[in-house]
Length: 365
Image (tube, rainbow, N blue to C red; front, side):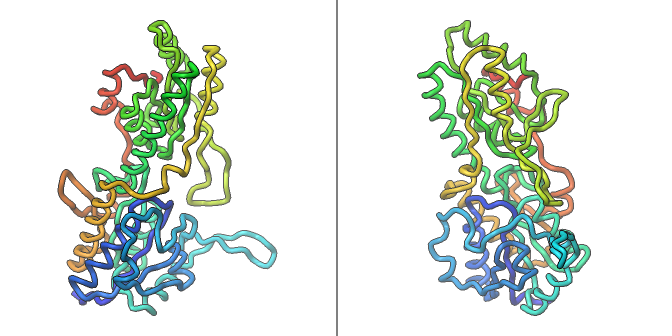
């Protein structure tokens, strides 16, 4: 096996706390343990397409552990296999520019590419590996926690903490004004943030994509609480939740073949419907990108650091086409193609759902 002299690292998809911790671990492990050079690729796959690469030294990653976001920048739009271009007539076209990626990697003599990102980033990485023979190692990142091959992704714990803290704050104002509060959290088509923050924050109703809800069941829960003297209720809603037999609510469609729908607005829909049914004043709050920002929790810092270290170890061992992940207490590797094959969703009969139901939480069913 060829000795690795240079590693390239990129952060793709949405930003989240913990990305810098991975970059720091990759740079320190590669340089200190193996004398391997590390090159940072700017703005995800865009940097490989547009030749925006910079060498990373130990000084470049000093002090970045507690910082949110990513020092490299990121993008969830620059898929080299479906890259948007505009011709002289102003017409949008999508074409395969993966040859540019290969040339950039070859020109910079990068021996292995470490891709830090979620399902979209890893799907592209796997395609580069299988179609273009580029050695890749994946690192799972997403606040949605919907990647297989790992029990949890870094970024999720921080988003969960922010969502839970926000629910705690809304609890007091809901109780004071005797209102219903609908709190919308991120997660796309997976309900992990809604379920766990709702459970931790004492949500009376939790609505998740995996369990379509009925509005009358939500209203019944609120009526039951009112009979017991509880004049307020908290509804925690995942952005991808939808009513039984209905469609997902989205804010708009965009010209993006990778992700053409921007979710958002389900809390407004639920809030208005519930106020119409119950007559109780209802307000909604969309937490949005605040869940992605800020300093990572200690858990995410440690997990991200472990992922970065093990990604370099996997690269040195030649485990290309694999993604690192945590299983129990140990870091394991899984083929990227297996990790992205089926999204990690909540099972309606899971222990977490049963636990929430046992303490009186309604899922609108």
